[in-house]
Image (cartoon, rainbow, N blue to C red):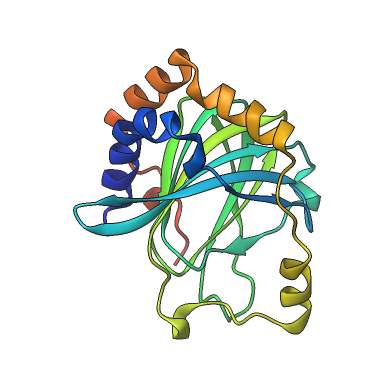
Length: 199
C-alpha cells in the first residue's frame, strides 16, 4: 500500500470531494489527550482500494503533554498551515514504549508517511496547525496495539464537531491557495520517515 501515492491521489480528488458538502458528515473532536484534534473525514478510493481522507485542525500543546503512540493503520500526512514538533520511535505496538528520536520540526509544506506497524510518534503543535491525513486499511489485529477498557471508554466519549467548526474547516480547505499548495506539495513528496527509524 503506497501511502505517498494515496496522498497524491487525494490532492487530485480533493477539489471534487469538497464540492459535495454531504460527504463531510463524519467528524470527531479528539480531546481525550493533547493535542486536541478536530477531524473531518470521508472515504475515497485509489485504483479500487479504499482509504480515508482526513482534514485536521490541531491545537497547540507542550511536547511533554503530547501522546506518544503507534497507529492501527498506515498513513501519510501533508501540513498545509502551522507547524509541530515531532518525536519518533520504532517497536512492537504491544511492546514497551520505544526509544524516542527527535525532535523534528514539520511545518507548512512538509509531507511524510508512517507505513509500518512499528512506527510510533508524537506531535506537539506550536500553533494551530492544519493538515491532511490519508489512512489505509488497518494492520492485521496481531500487529495492532490492544485496546484497554480505559481506551474504549475514552473513545466512546468522543463527540462530533459543531456545525460552525465544520464550516470553518471546509472553508479553509476549499481555498484555492490551500488546494494549490496541497497539490504541489504531494507532487514532490518524499519519505522523511525512513531515515529516522530506530531499529
